[in-house]
Amino acid sequence: MLKNIPKILSPELLKVLCEMGHSDRIVIADGNFPSESMGKNAIVIRADGHGAAELLDAILTVFPLDGYVEAPVSLMQVMPGDTVETPIWDEYKKIVAKHDERGEKAFGEIERFAFYEEAKKCYAIIATGESALYANLILQKGVI
Image (tube, rainbow, N blue to C red; front, top):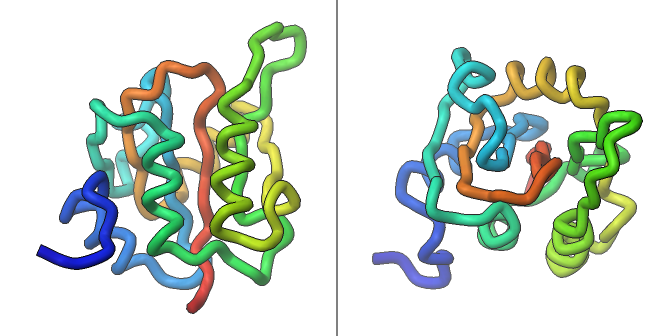
C-alpha cells in the first residue's frame, strides 16, 4: 500500500502516469469513445466503472500539467449543428482549477475528427464508463 495515492488510480494507471515524460499525452475517454481502435499504438487502460471527472481529479493529484504550452488540457469540440449540452466541462474546469493555477485558461478545444487523430498519437488512453457526451479530453504532462 502507498500513502496519499487516490484509490481510483490502479497500479496499471499509476505505472503509465509514471512512465510518461514531459509533453507526453494521455486521453481520458468517455464510454462512447473508440478507445481500442484509436489506441492501437498506445496503452489502453480499462476503467469502465469510473467516471471521467473522478479520474481527472485523481490523476491531477499526481500528474503535472505542461506549463510550456497554452492549453495542456484539450476537449473534443462539439460538432457544428449538434445541440448537445456539455455540463461535464464545467466539472472539468473546477477540477483543473483545484490543481493548476491557470484554471479555465489551461483548456483548449480540438475539432472532433482532429481529436481522433491526436488521440492516435497519445501515450495512453483511459477507457472510462463516462456516459456524458463530448466528455473526452487529452492531458499533456508537464514537469515537477
